[in-house]
Length: 272
Image 1: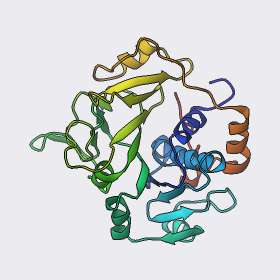
Image 2 (image 1 turned 90 degrees about the horizontal axis):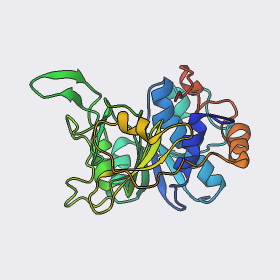
Image 3 (image 1 turned 180 degrees about the vertical axis):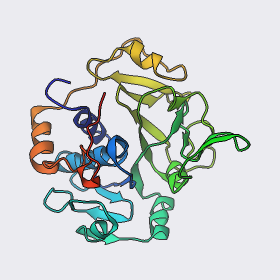
């Protein structure tokens, strides 16, 4: 991509969905490219929004509530000791975090998964059936609560047929297929290394919203394991502005702790 990275493009796009006076949630990831997609990019997105249109937006990174996000306050590593000493409003136990979800106080939740289907159901529990399990994944964790209670969910995954599937093997977080009785709004956005998707209101099915510069609609279709809704006209994802790139590179993430996962000691570059 000319003049900017994929991680920067996605961070800018995600920042548009952060609203003022809302709590935003980002989980704790592992390392490498997966961490950039699930943690680093969303964190930069919230910080971008705070500098622009949502100065009162707050962020939960796991149990860390409203950490100071300017680079001088962000720790150089994400070991438990470093997270505990990250300047923030407070550190909260798990039951209090889940309480925030269930009280309807979670605005935008960022989530990633091993599988996502056409309705936005997630799977981080297992690949295969209960009787013939091929891969055991981390388990539902708090993702079930996000799916039930968050006002909006932004899904961040790699774009391939193994991840974007017709039906997930296990529903760890509910999409738009069966939401009766669930107070949250479910997934509203899917960000991948190829495109941006949303969901058609009348059917709850995933719909192509834009393709990243250099990506063709045919590339997206070929790498999706189900039939996406394709509008008659699909624009390109808007590239970052000069001002946005300057803010990311000089103020928010100059040491690339987030967008190259350097905070995890497993530095990586998010590749197309």
